[in-house]
Image 1 (cartoon, rainbow, N blue to C red):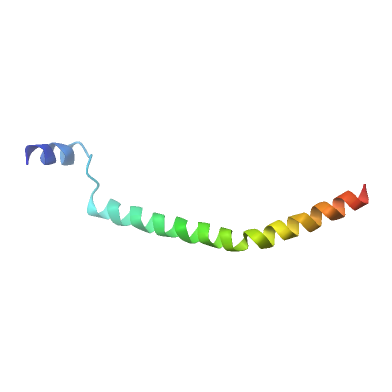
Image 2: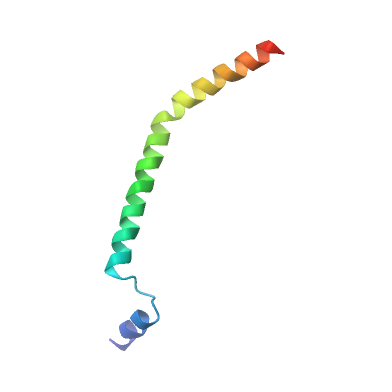
Length: 58
């Protein structure tokens, strides 16, 4: 018990509020990454068309 108290006093144990915030941030990051991976093929295709167009202009 003394070790746990020391950890709390030294802020080595996150408070319930910080733990909730951490989980929300992780959830948001997963959502962002998921949307990026879904849009990845579309973006790659668009960039390929732009590169082809730029190459044709040269």
